[in-house]
Image (cartoon, rainbow, N blue to C red):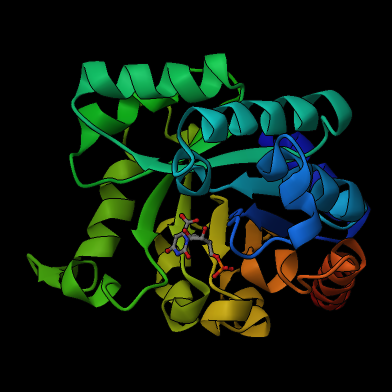
Length: 269
Ligand SMILES: O=C(O)c1cc(=O)[nH]c(=O)n1[C@@H]1O[C@H](COP(=O)(O)O)[C@@H](O)[C@H]1O
């Protein structure tokens, strides 16, 4: 999927909602546990109930990998289900990878060629040769952690290096990489006050913004400070949507939560 197509979908649906699939067998409705593949069945049910309200899905691979081979198979079934049934949705493998060049190349092949995701989240810490292998694929995107939503973001990311906060160095340096038009950046919704400075460095890039809902970030503030001239935002919510109910009505409850966010977004566009 191209970013132009993604932007068209955002305008068409009046939504820049990304739904995070952080599938936890301890939290899903008990009746699904009787199915052969509860992780996939839950993901499929959430997708079917919400697809018209969002433009992206973000399976967090940790929640699949935690269940070993079965989890990986569920991840494969989930991305195949999305690509076959809802090809206009942008897909994000939230895997937070990044390693020396030849290893990053293998990670990129795993997520772009074998699993056929549109994008993967990656860590910038190992620098240019760890990031650029992810930028070699047509219409595939790497989403670089810039300023994360968690408290630990203040350990390193906001520290001054040569008089500039490290997260700003990440943005400035990465935006010079080859094929940097295939880069998007993660900025936590809990860090909305940093978005004005961030937009000065990368005015047009797409931002993936997790941290509304369960982590307390404000959708209004993210849009106010972070919207680009062509929206340029994907706002993620995971637990706030997918675990809205742990009973048989979970699909409707998830849909209602997604609808509330979509409604707010439509008013802010
Ligand atoms: O890369 C991410 O998606 C991410 C980056 C970040 O800074 N903070 C963050 O919460 N995330 C992910 O976004 C999701 C947030 O989930 P909820 O807090 O349940 O909405 C989880 O899958 C996190 O791993």
